[in-house]
Image (cartoon, rainbow, N blue to C red; front, side, top):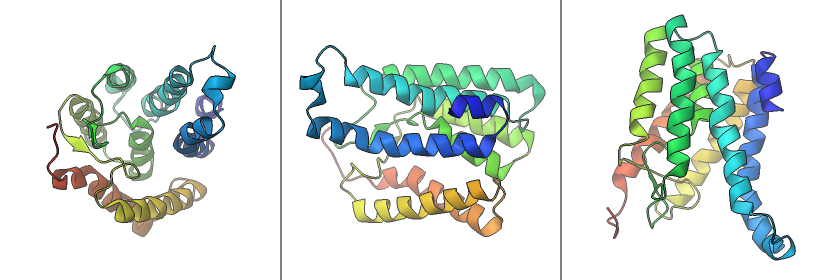
Length: 207
């Protein structure tokens, strides 16, 4: 549905679908384990299905949304979509994408969020190009990004900020992706926090 809305230019509806996918991604694993789906349906791999769905909602649909946004220079639109898909695919294929203490190594292919910020910020073309290229490079740099739920360090603060972020993101979507400066810059500050909090990661066995 997200792709259908995207190809029709219904960006707010697309982001609602991508947001719902984020929620489902957070609960599908625990629910599958609780109801022993792997034992009931051994023929099908939940892990593989999860990767397919995640790649579609985190990478493929956002790649189209970024390329078709009209917020990038025309000469970079197709290139941006290709860069997002390739970097996202390589990241999903990385066997070492996570540390033992549940941090991500490199930018964790959250291209859905990159697209969201591109739409609410509507930066100059050069800034959009810089954002896409910077995140592409960070996909392969061993910089640590926090998982806001699974990482124990600062978990309560991370979850609280995640809830605030989700509420403000809903406000932004229902305001037509133009919610006003207070909402936008609060969303930006929360994003900056999540990008940098990995720098304060406690010493761990794997570096």
